[in-house]
Picture: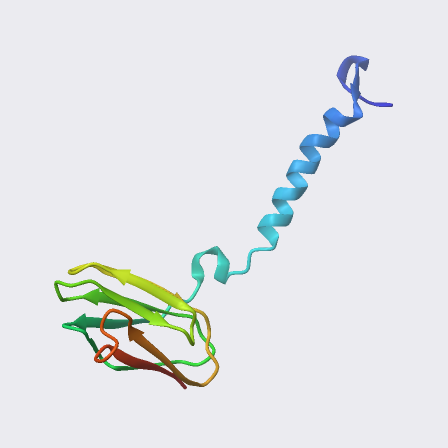
Length: 130
């Protein structure tokens, strides 16, 4: 069966349904956006971490529990470093002079260790979620 078009012509039903279905999907997708997802989202808290000569500064980073956050890592030395945390399942290698970041999902209150795998004796730190 078809749908009556102007001047008595019949359009196949699928010709009419496809644009309606596409429009309905667009409306549904737009309606599922929350105000935060539409651009009004709260920005991630950012914490700076510098590696210099095999030592992290600061050695302790306090973060809010229950919220995602970002750590911006700067390797201020000439040798490569590796930010690694088994607790957080994160690792990032940075060449000398490089900058990078890691985003950490919301943490439960507690202490989480990290270290520099290339400088295991001196490159140690922790993240405390409160």
